[in-house]
Length: 144
Image (cartoon, rainbow, N blue to C red; front, side, top):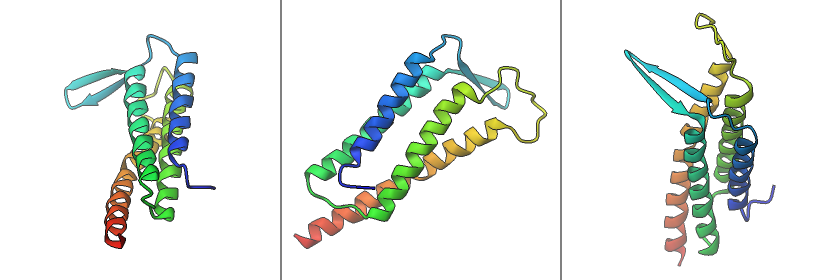
C-alpha cells in the first residue's frame, strides 16, 4: 500500500459514503439513543454528514502535511487509515443493512453491538492520528 497520498483514501471513503447514502436514503431512517429517561432520535443522514465532514477534514490535514513535506510515521498512518475507513464503512453500511427494524431488546448479543464496536474503534484510533501529527511536526522542524 503506497502511503504518499493518504488523503485520497479518506476522500474516496467519504465519496463512497455519500453515494451510498444517496442511493439507499429513506426519510424515516433514524437511530434512537436512550440515556436514562431521555430518548435522542437522530436521523441517519445527520450522522452521515457529520462523518463526511470529519473524513474530509482528516483528508485535508493529510493533504496539507503532504504539501508541506512533513513525513508521518508509516505504521501509525497505516493503522489510522485501516481502522478509520473500515470502522466508518462497517458502521455506515451496517446502519442500513444490518440493523433489524424490530430489534429484540432482550437479546444478549446482536449486530448493534458490532456496529457499536466499530464506531468505538473508529473514535479511539483518532488520538493516534493526533499524536502522529504532533511527533512528526516536531521532528520535521528539529531537523530543519
